Amino acid sequence: MNLQEIKERILEEYQNSNMEPWFYPEYEEVKGFNGESEIFLLGLNPSSGQFPSKRDKKLYSLLKKLGLKNIHITDFIKVRAKNKEVPNLLKNKNLLQKNADFLKKEIEILKPKIIITMGYQCQKLLNQYFEEQSFLVKRIKHYGFRYQKEEDIFKEIESNLKYTIELKE
Image (cartoon, rainbow, N blue to C red; front, side, top):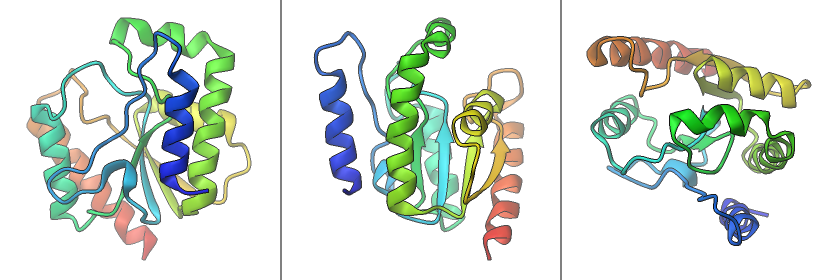
């Protein structure tokens, strides 16, 4: 199985539902979901906004600048949701298990050394569904975090990503 086959399975899984799967696209030379490096960047779930937003552009630009063009960017929950809908997704154990199984396949294929979670909730789910880990888990703030100045968030993310890259080497 490869990433394209996982993507097809996810799309198939949700084709007859009101849920919309979404995958980080290739943009500005950063491969997004199709990245195959030993580092994953893991979000909680895709937002319902348009891609690329101003912050998406900044994230991709930063990843490119740091030499992370082949980083695998994915979400724990593979379907789009508005912020107010996320608590309901987190209560849906069947949905969470199904998406954990998809993520497990991504991990089996790419065998990451490090998974960088974007936010506390994402890290919590990763630890809950992957008790035995063959990878290091590091957490950063989500690039869409709204309770801090955007420039400060990206400085912090850059610093944390640089540190994480050093750990890999």
